[in-house]
Length: 200
Image (tube, rainbow, N blue to C red; front, side):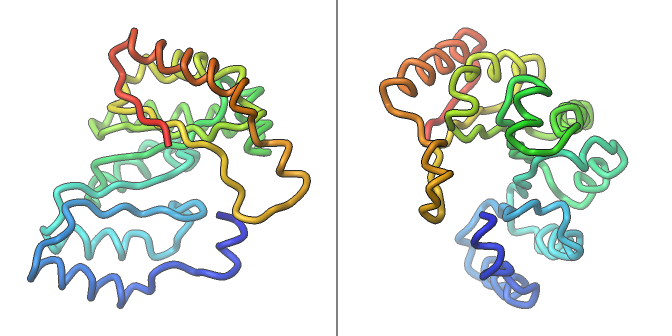
């Protein structure tokens, strides 16, 4: 995502408005997902959300986020009032030590967990995604344990796929001999809890 952000600034609001208007006339999409970089930092996010909500043409409005800003309950409530009913939260570690190291942001785990708690308290749908790397492969089942108390609708596990081939990023790729048992263990734990999963 980081490399792409330097080249692609997202869908201009007028193009988005046109796409939404086309969807009103000839319904094709039931859900709109806002993603890219960290979408909660987008200055015009609420303008986009207003267009989506006002159109009445989407059954669901989803936000993909690291949930750090959602630690502010009033901000989370504002997003929900603006029409967001699904939150797809990136969680790559089972605790502060692992998540903060992976995100390279001290406090990111605590903020994400506070954001997740606010999502659930305010009645929105919670889903999580975890990118599978050498940095978290040994704690995948523990990530499931960490999220379980919040009853996520689904947990997704995404294989790490570098956008560009940097030598230092190759070390993040998990050999399948190591990844296989780890992901099977996480999926088994999720099944015990009755949590839906997807591996991508």
